[in-house]
Image (cartoon, rainbow, N blue to C red; front, side):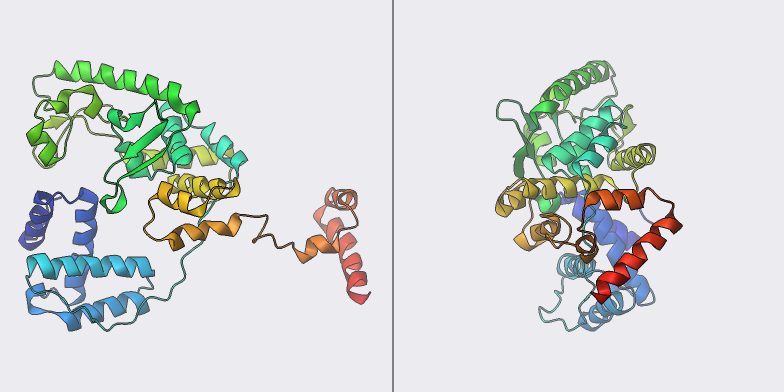
Length: 355
């Protein structure tokens, strides 16, 4: 995570020492860096509220970012001025807020989920199964450790999720045999790794590593989805076995979508969207779904209610009402070539308009 800028490297070291996740560090550095470049590479210590307001307004009016992205940029700069510059920003910053409406999530049908998962190999099938069956994010899935699986209560414990929030989520019974096989494979990896004198054990949070120095070579603490090979820790240079990278899941899902012939713009996160929507469709309370997803605000969860009923909240298309004389007629028309179909339908449509 080293950069050419000593200032940015200082921020990186500051955040890592305080146990910020690498992903958060990367995000904050991105916004701090673009803020500096936006103002002609001026040092942040020579700038303040006015420059921050100008930058945030630029993001809303010129870059057309979403409200969430603008808020992330503000959080990054607030951190910068509070912890690094030691001169906190005003609580009453005056800038144009992003008005861009959030996009509705892409949701698969249950049949589409089956088709997608049938095209994934065993390991990616299990990861996708946990994402769809338990509503996990990609990073949450790959960061699971063996001890996070509770077979007795059929649940998963998700630690340090987005926003460093912990939660307990449901576990599909159907995945238990695959999970047991996966844990057996993890155990085999561990047996081989321990024989390597250079192996430093799995990465653990600093406080836990200090209090339990031998835990990093015990099975419960191993990642559930370990990498195929050992690698050097980017922070310490020690040899460890890291977890799967989310990019691998993204590539596997992309390939499965193509092979399955699915036409929606599906990504791994679509599995989480589908989990939430299908839970609501099955009658789950929205507060329960909110807890499963670890949403701070129920309004974030309510976005999934757009597919609770058929179509757009149960609205029946006027085109469907137009042809309500029977499905057999429509099936017969649909079997014709496109030009014949249009020629058959338009006169009927015109007659209904006149009647």
